[in-house]
Amino acid sequence: MHDIEPYYFWRDEYIASEDSDSPFFNREYNEFFFENKIYNYYIHPQWDPFGSPTLYTKVLYVDYDMEFAILEMFGEWNDCIQNDIMFLKRNLAEPMMDKGIKKFILICENVLNFHGHEDCYYEEWHEEVQDMGGYVALINTLSHVTDELKATYLDYYMFFGAPLDELNWRKLKPSQVVTSVEFALSRQNNKRIAQ
Image (cartoon, rainbow, N blue to C red):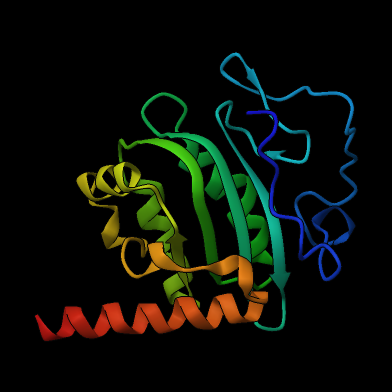
């Protein structure tokens, strides 16, 4: 697990620890000292903690003019025991929303498991970003994670599943990721209206 690093090819354009509006502003990283763990496994020091003992993130890119953020997630998303959505909403999303971010794209290919519970924080987050004209979209979730998200009825509050799970985002610039996600969301909305 310590070999899995966050995506770093956009670092020429954005680094969260150098962004004075970021929740991770001035965070220092030690590449030689591994301190964060998921259960008994140390993880790469570039992952950022936000309150959960099993779920970490990396803010890959934020554009305050276009009002979007792209976050890469890593670990086990567990709302049953840790209430990870509370930490994500309160410690990460809300400070970003206070700075005008209304579109959240979470890359979830390294979310190894999801354990759902209540949907209160999801509903709250959805209503707040929707009021701002935004959304929360998860891309490239593993199939068993998507199944659990659906079983918890989180598709009422977030976008995930096909075609978002087929997005080859690494070949795109951040603005192209947003354009691709929004195109996929418009296709999903058109299908919902047609049904």
